[in-house]
Length: 429
Image (cartoon, rainbow, N blue to C red; front, side, top):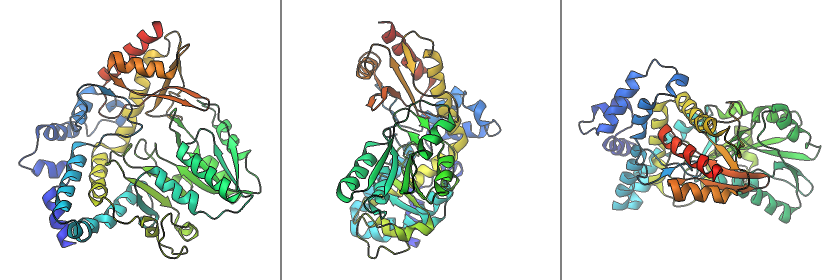
């Protein structure tokens, strides 16, 4: 640990105090430090509209100079401090990998586990470090014991990787998948809950709930569905790929047994980082995805036997947590909600334009879906890129069709004004 402390000390820690102490502090960090001090007494909702403050946050990123990235829902860029830490960790590792990886940098894994648990509101012994949400969720999907005829409830709007994993178990083992087909967007919480609860039977063993439907930005009432499932002794698996660090919540508040997320989305960690939560009493019941001794081992670390892995990527996650804490969870949530509602509010009355995401905080946050009557999502997506150099993504999945727009904290309202202009002209063409 002494080696690691010395190493981390040389790297520098991300906090306002540490940055201020750095004689070589770059201008962007000095400006951000000053901006954070100036807004310390302003409530997050009011600050969400302060373009001057968020301009200083923008300077913490090395954003693409020649186009506007509005597809942060796939993978978000990391702040400068996170990217720099990852590069420095790699350079150090590369000098003597077997020494620095295992004897220095990997010693920070338990510290990182503790920091992630604090952020998630869980026990440290309930958090496993993974590479993405798919790996985390498929650990549970393939690890939970089910027999032929056992039922799993899920929706057609869930993520393809999860659907594919469940279909594989269905084909190989004869479990039964019970499908829900949601009509979205919805601001009817009772409708959303009842779609799941009406599908529960005596043979239902697990329900999978996507916390936010990634195609459309629909928040789901996870806790109410989970509470109903618990009354029937049904396990609850939550796909939180798009919610962790997008808006404020604690995993235990969801009353789920398992939760998986990608940290390279809304936390802004390096690409290839994720998290698995398993309720402590459930750990011994789940087989690890990769062999790790006895299945009954009651230790969350049994889910991390990946072999040699990119330590330099993993350890930089701590810098992402620091940056997230420095900006503030509530500030970030309110800004993302404001940006989504900003552009949607400007296009909602344009003829032919259809919005497919709620304005309300209870049902949405950063992600919005838009379509234009008589045009395909691919046509709108291509038009925004060709004429405005706006990077978005066309969605055609089940009954959801449109272009997904996903700003981030570095996005400005000027960026979104260009989006509005593009949608307006496309709709009138």
